[in-house]
Length: 141
Image 1: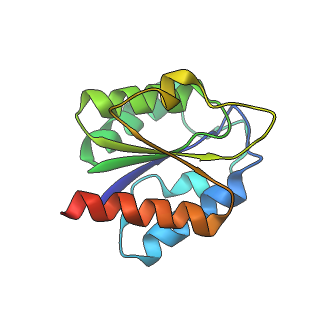
Image 2: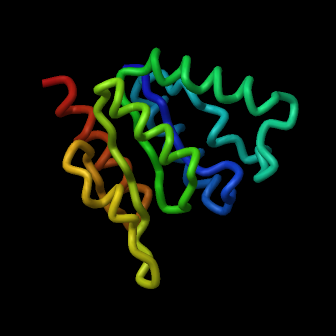
């Protein structure tokens, strides 16, 4: 399955190790992650400085169009990730949003309240991986 993995870049890279683990898990299951660079620990909040904003935008829309599903890690709020989620829904792709439980913050109602998406909270990487497995399994039925 071709997966577009969305997560924060310019809004903060604190969770980059988590992104890398989730992407690695998907790849270990034989899935093609079209946005593997999201998990690269060398990618900073400055983004991909070797590309213009327009090049990134064009590339990402092409990758979204090629994907079968979108999995978004939405713990760190990001306008870009929100845009990618909306674009995915317009393509009628299935979308899974993963959110790491944080007692002092709530997930945006625009994500949590959207009935067209699957939203799952997790506390551990293992839980997040199980949510991804369950989501993908439903896609294959």
